[in-house]
Length: 270
Length: 108
Image (cartoon, rainbow over all chains, first blue to last red; front, side, top):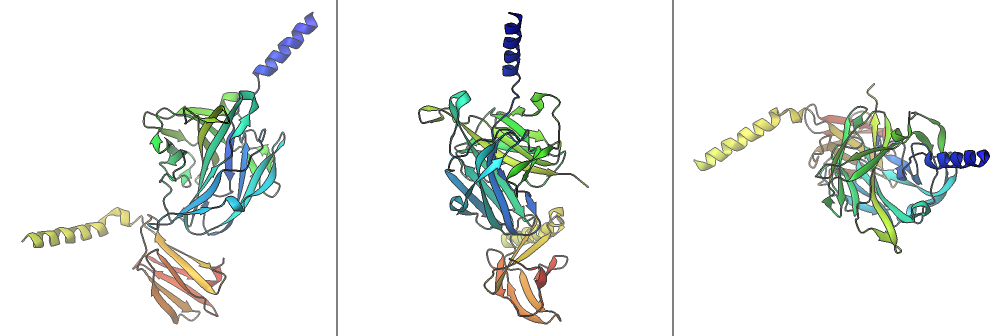
């Protein structure tokens, strides 16, 4: 009897100690602020970045494009969907279907945008679809980084997302169909394991240790105007996911959490 | 009289523009790319995002002799035929706002 109780309590503890983690759609490239133009690699991975944990299988993305703008020139949109190559990305615990491509960047801002296929999360009996943005600048000449690109779910940066020093704040505005989302819930994760593009895998080595599970995935809320503020404590890539922006979000008859994700970088002052 | 006042206001605005510290924070930028078809495109601009349309561009050979002279177009771009030998590109947006790009550093 004692044995049975021990087993049951062990199982219960295991069930409750599954680490709090969030799904994050990544668009990864090593540098957000490049000195010179040229070919840049991009990897699209749907994963748990702080722990380099379970990596989900991505379906064929609905949209993947870049909006390039330089100075006062009109922003120009280029479809990149046909350039994507399927790959397998290895996390610390598994491997999942992902995509990669290469893009030739010249001067100014390049807003890369991904609308992935909705992902079925069996544990929640619901779908997740994270529209993701990352902004790469070449040469320091700004463009339209602060303009919405028109995604249904979108985070618009209020600070240049590629010029942050460690310790600066990052501010963004959460939009659903172009309108601010008051009090949107935002989850934040640090890209704690360096993505190794040549190995299509995360580095085993972590750069930060969370003292407790709450620190793996930080949570903040936007204000009444859909604006959120986050002080950046460490250099590297930080992901922000504003959750469930479409109150009627559904896909194939099931609930679908339509989220907006943005990745930004910070650099140490040296 | 009215005209005179507006001229004065305009002059004051122009004067004020040159005195504003924003001006100090605007650095000229110029990057050139080999298009791989025998031509080179230079993209000019400023760190505050302002346009470089109309800014003078000079392409000189290794000895400083001018080969091509032109201006940045409405998109702040200038495309020219790649010179055979050593060359450099000078982006000249006025005193303190000059940039020279060595042809050897111009790649695809």
